[in-house]
Image 1 (spheres, one colour):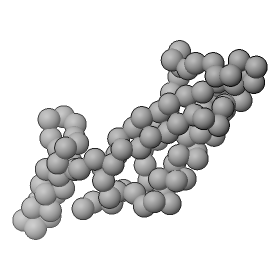
Image 2 (cartoon, rainbow, N blue to C red):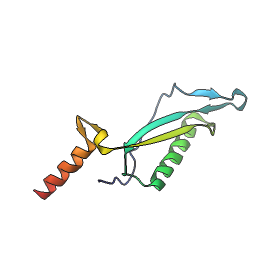
Image 3 (cartoon, one colour):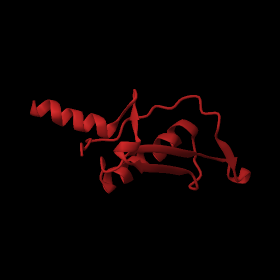
Image 4 (cartoon, rainbow, N blue to C red):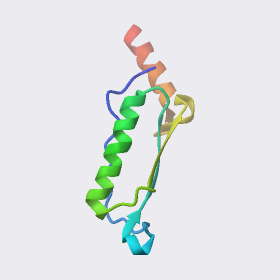
Length: 100
């Protein structure tokens, strides 16, 4: 399976869906739910990504409550795609073109 060297960069702006948690602490909390193709990133890359996302949200929102979440779903290449083609289709097509 094709292995990307990094997770895609995501830029967020105009966050209106954050909620105040524990008013007395004056912190904001967030939940980010994202999908990536299974097997394209190592456990260390995913851990580093989650840490970087948390730091980025602190940069955007100020003090962030530690009970803020980043959930990375690793999905099958056959169940993930864009432009009407799955990532698995793109992988196989690339191999066939390279062999031709």
